[in-house]
Image (cartoon, rainbow, N blue to C red; front, top):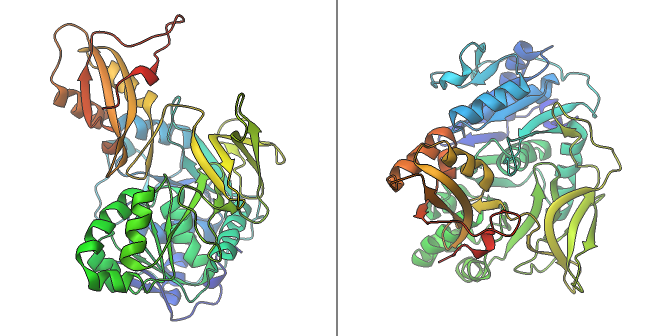
Amino acid sequence: MLLPALADPSDRPALRFGDRELTYAELAGAVGALAGALAGRSRVAVHATASLETAVAVAAAVHAGVPIVPVNPKLGERELAHVLGDSVPELVLAAPGVALPDGYAGLPRVEIDVAARAGSDAADVPESAPALVIYTSGTTGPPKGAVLSRRAIAANLDGLAEAWAWTADDLLAHALPLFHVHGLVLGVLGPLRRGGRLRHLGTLDAATLAASGATMVFGVPTQYHRLADQLERDADAAAAVGRARLLVSGSAALTAVDHARMRAATGLAVRERYGLTETLILTAARVDDEPEPGSVGRPLRGTELRLVPVPDSADLGTVEVRGPSLFDGYLNRPPRGADEWFATGDVGRWTESGQLALVGRSATDLIKSGGYKIGAGEIENALLEHPGVAEAAVIGVPDDDLGERVVAFVVPAGPAPDAQELTDHVARLLAPHKRPRRVRFVEELPRNDMGKVQKAKLPRD
């Protein structure tokens, strides 16, 4: 059973978003009521706002044995049309009163009532059955739906529980979105599987986090960078955060500088972990290991990881993995073989202590900004639809706050359009975090003899 705490629920607190809270008994009642409306559906979507309703919806779908597609509420019109057209959900779940984008028109809406109460036994479905369909970042084309089974999610969360000594006594705090692996699988299903507590803070600021009583904190590097700024100015908050037992960072690399700043402020080392939508979490710095800034820990129990040697390098290799937490394949595409090695596209090396250190991507078109993974090609295609753009190349440029910021190089078609106009054009078609932070107009893009744009030659200043 994926969420055993719902089978015999107690009056212990389970979920808290802002000032709204559900105990396990209340959660089980809300889940049971909604699960009845989902039973027998082939697939459903949830307009995945960072809310108590989204958490209840996903738990209810798991309870009912119905695959659920968490949809980023900030998707652009084209992205939303692709996700819904590819996944073909029978209905969309949404919080009461939330206005849905026009792209949902014609799809039946079921409102999530967190106050409803009904009994319902968990559906008798095999552990190999799909639980979630999470869409990737679409680095080389339209996003693909990674199908994650109930078994994969359970194995991954149990592996993390072992690595982090995660128990029912833990209170997890974070402020992550609920439409991807980090915030939803780890951040919601994780504490519910353990029978622990989740407090979603809305924003990861020093005062709110200090008052939360968290024993575990999840965040992305941008959040820790900003948190370090605040904690350095607030000794009381820093001391309170330091009473947690585990700080975890993921979704991109945390800089050595921010590692040192967080440790100096709180006395705690931040531990990193590594994974993808398709693989869930592969490696993690264990609670009983001394973290190494620049590394992402050891493989979780049952996960096999190998480095395929990179030519002309003594210690680097491209990361390939297999194990119980990998996805079954992409929706509407051929299934993945159970024992098939999956190439992550990352390049890494083993440290002397046996931890994995990532050194870059074998693909250059994945930008990690503010905890999001952004496909450069998707932004380029959007820019090329503007009549004032003849050519476009998009890269990630190092940024102290975001990790990387999106920069677009544009060859104009005639007089150069206004840069803000291009930014707004992208933000209309795609999610707002994918908009270029800077647009630079150039006469031509650097290309090789085959006509391919050489992004390495674009300035990073």
